[in-house]
Amino acid sequence: MRRTSSRRGTDGYRAPELLDDPNGSFSNKSDMWSLGCILFEMITGQQRFRSDYALALYTVQKEPLFGDSPFLPTLSLLFVSEILQIDPLKRPSAARFRRMIKIRRFVQSEDTFLTLSGDLMLSAIHLSYLHGEMEQDIAMEIMEYPQCMEGAVGEALEIALMYGRDQIAEALRKCSRSDLSKALRYASSRGSASAVRFLLKQEIDINAPDEDGLTALDIAVKRQISGVVAMLWESGAKWPHSSSRALRELLAMENVSLEQVLRRTVASVLPQNPVEASWQISCTPLSLDETLHTWSVVLVPAILSR
Amino acid sequence: MDNEYYENEKRAVLKLCQSSHQNILQVYEVGQLRKQTVFFFIDMELCSFTLAHYLRGSEVPKLVKWESTLERILDVLQPIVEGLVFIHEQGEVHRDIKPENSMSKVSPYLGLMP
Image 1 (cartoon, each protein chain N blue to C red):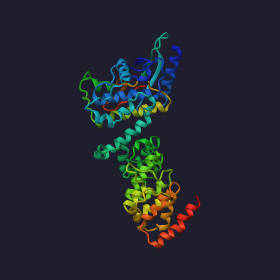
Image 2 (cartoon, rainbow over the protein chains, first blue to last red; image 1 turned 120 degrees about the vertical axis):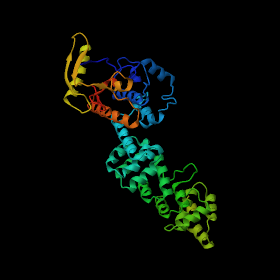
Image 3 (tube, rainbow over the protein chains, first blue to last red; image 1 turned 90 degrees about the vertical axis):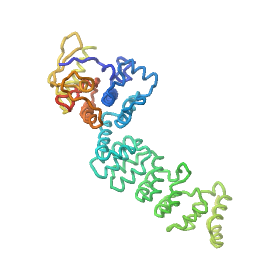
Image 4 (cartoon, rainbow over the protein chains, first blue to last red; image 1 turned 90 degrees about the horizontal axis):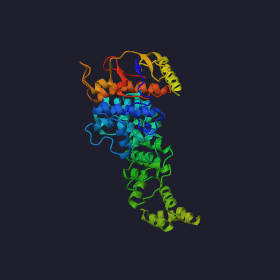
């Protein structure tokens, strides 16, 4: 037999949103806070918040949650800081936390090195080719919380497509557009045709540059991956860095005709600056005949049509 | 208001009685202890240990000492989370999760007390 101790939880495990409001309504996220407190205690052997007072102090003073605890690796492996968030909406639900733990456990049991080396979801996807049964959990996690991939979309997508994990590939579509653009550049640099094809079907900024200002097409041209260049080219990638060297490399590719390149170059530069366009064409390694041809077929009509 | 509170609690507990889950302790009976107060009793499975015993103390002789390894934590955490997911799926909130309420008949399996 047991008596209910209190109608609003127990000191030390009570969620912060219940401090100010004695009649505050419990939500399932308040339970999650309590669970986070237990988890902290299981890992460190100490209660993080010994009383309501300590908790109130914590919420006001914004002190660090863990400090430099020696248990930091385990605390982060088990998502304690994700649960102990002051805003209840930011805490994971019990169902999501169960999934996170399941994925963590799956990764842990298979390969410790992968866990230590980086992103949990990526490790999970790496491993999912061995065990199809985890695919759905991983896909669901990505689907509901696309940010959990943290920019590793390109690699994840490549693995997923390589091993035919369609659910995961499908889930990755939900990632942010900048993540997808990053993935496109990654896939282009790796020459992963299936990933590029998949990404081009999504709503994606094909011309988004990286920190060095290079677009997916720049990267593919630089690495001389002609299949990918052709694909990007046909999907309408523009040619923002038409240095003569890059242009020559592009022309050396199969499936790419001179006229196509010139038309695209002119189309991307001409509207702002016809002089720039003609200068760019003069930089290309063309014979006299070709230059004349270019002027008459591409440039002059383009200027006239303005 | 007390009466209303009592009825709500009773309804919640009865609901959990009807739907048994392996990680939620079985409840046998619910009743009010004294009419004027809000205390009421829940008759349930008998358990020997709670997680608090493991974590905090040596009150129980012969109890295995708590080891904070990842494997061990996950073993203990799993049933608690399963139980909590079940409660939330029923549209209820536990409202008093703490080590004292995570019980075990036999080490190392733990179940949640409603």
